[in-house]
Image 1 (cartoon, rainbow, N blue to C red):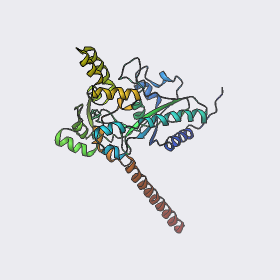
Image 2: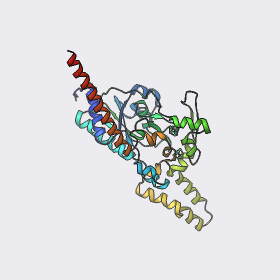
Image 3: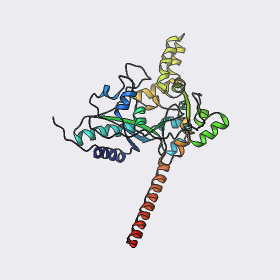
Length: 322
Ligand code: SF4
Ligand code: SF4
């Protein structure tokens, strides 16, 4: 079937408009060649969609400002918005196929079933980083954006061509206030407040990240409860009598796990969020949360109006001179 040709820039604008209209904050195109070189074989875009031409990355904002003020257990339930990112990306794949007639897929945000619980089928984080809508931070490489703070990412692959973006020229992490704290205490806020001390590393003399060390096992034990299930089963098998066995399976903490499993609750995969609760970029970036975003949008409108007024005045002055 002969497919209609489209201007790649026009297509990109239309896709970005779709994403922003649906509530996405950031939109970027990752350079396919770079991804093919960086991603390991089997996890590169062409291994999933052989004729892929474009890798689209989208970012949606994190929780509301209210959720960041809630206690830890409440935040663990309501802090993530990744399903919204997936919903928009799924819609975008359908939009591309119906509007332009080219194949597109929503990239599964899942782990590779042949590689266990720590190897994703595709790194959505890498797509976002190469697309320039996030940079790796001191907090376990969580991507941060100078305007939107912490976001959740989703990707779409398509056979439709669009021009790529560049990775961010500057990393917003570490924030100047984190550098000050690091110089005083030897720790950044995310390192200091992680409850299981799984973050460490250093900042160089240019105030840039020198080294970032992330103990993903400690973080997962704290925050990703699916990791706890094998231990519960092991305790059950090791139980010495029916009472111990009953406690291993039905103790109050473990009942929560079965409940979450039965309702498919996303919190089995969640963060504990304490590193992001104290991160100045996540908390204070201009558009980082809905309240700030409202103020940020108003500020942008005021700036745009001021720029338009200046342009108008310059035009009037040059008309007078003529
Ligand atoms: S999510 Fe929690 S445990 Fe993991 S790095 Fe952040 S603060 Fe530490
Ligand atoms: S608190 Fe945020 S900005 Fe500061 S070092 Fe950690 S991740 Fe970077």
